[in-house]
Length: 369
Image (cartoon, rainbow, N blue to C red; front, top):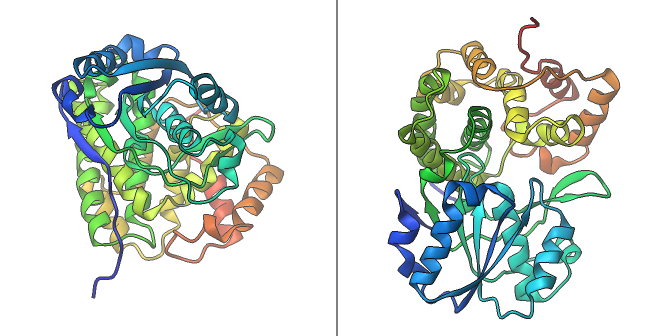
């Protein structure tokens, strides 16, 4: 007997020049839009220009807020709201990677509820004004998730706002990812893979999430050999972007699991990019499974024979320096994981202190030259 819930309110429009071709989908969202984007990337890859064209095609006025940086802070979210709260903003067009889309979700809440940014961390079940997402990175999948992660400067940590805000529409055009260098492309691709894999192996997986995850994993698997050859053609990027959005759909239902929970501290304290942090932890995470039927299916889907082969692939495609952790640091990180059942509940087997310690101790490493 099947028993689960599945909600995916985001309309997805896929294809080259999808935004301009389908600008009529912006009708009805309002008369004035706030474009939320980063300092430079959207100007270089054409996504901002296309966003402006689409809005002008529909006679929608707009204001550009282009100050979102990696790991958006509450301060920048507050600034976007304060500078534009009197401008009659009806909806937000989020143009960029996961940071821009995450920031836009938080900003939308401020406009809807007329509150301060810090309040989104304590108030519950808040809604936002409509959001349209134009992702320019293949991996985060923020365009199909309800999550918004912000960086708390004083505490030096990233934290989910705890709200559930889905974009209403997502336009997927892989042309906007063409200017991403190889190391960023592979870093974000591994993040997308980790969403698919963690969701597939989660206690919360179900018939629909497994169906999606299996297709997403196949798409990622089709990109492995091209990435090993440094082939980042538009065809490869289209598959990675589709896999990324599917990964977002999956974790919007299942959440993430151990690699994400254990990897955030590597990003915060060791400055390891998020996707790389997941990749560093993945071999140890997968070796932690005692029941391996679904794990073996996962490896089959990506056309990889073993965890050891996957480790070699990650070593080959990821750009990273070896991370050294002291016993004291490992203990602190493990204590933090064990302190919250929420961080462990998506893993299908009981996790011990020794298990978590071993995952940190067996971080993926490159051979010393």
